[in-house]
Amino acid sequence: MDENTVLSLDGKVTEFSWKQPHVYLFVEVIEDDKPVVWSIQLPGINSLVRNRGWPKDTLVPGDEVFVRVNPAEDRRPYSKLQSIQRVDGRSHPDPAETYATGHSMSHWEDGTLVVDTRNLDDHRSPYQIGVPSGSQKHVVEK
Image 1: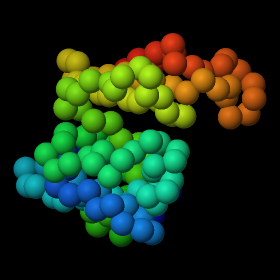
Image 2 (image 1 turned 180 degrees about the vertical axis):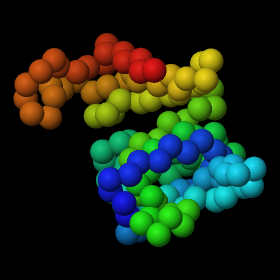
Image 3 (image 1 turned 60 degrees about the vertical axis):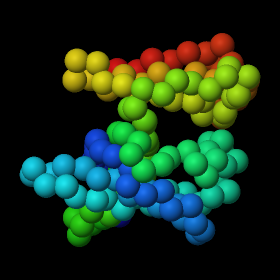
Image 4 (image 1 turned 90 degrees about the horizontal axis):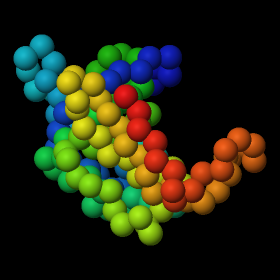
């Protein structure tokens, strides 16, 4: 993978393959007016469940997503996931359901991606410095 390049892709999930050693996400995007399906490598199941709170049905075909990826060096539509945001209008889960990295939802606002993150676990930063995080924290990025 080209670790020095990050591509942003906006598309629809066609498949979410929940297998070891890596989970794969397939996203159809439009490139040069033609549909192209990108194969995107994610971490393994254990990492997704334990660190991000993802169940097997986190993503399903038809979900609209915005992903940032490190592409294959040969420029084929294969990549490693850097970040993912749903952009399909879902709401956050119950506030009692918290995650180490929070729960993010996204939407487009006048051509700008808006990321809304809530439901963070109560903890300090990973380096034990900085502002504590917690269930009352609410971050909006544009």
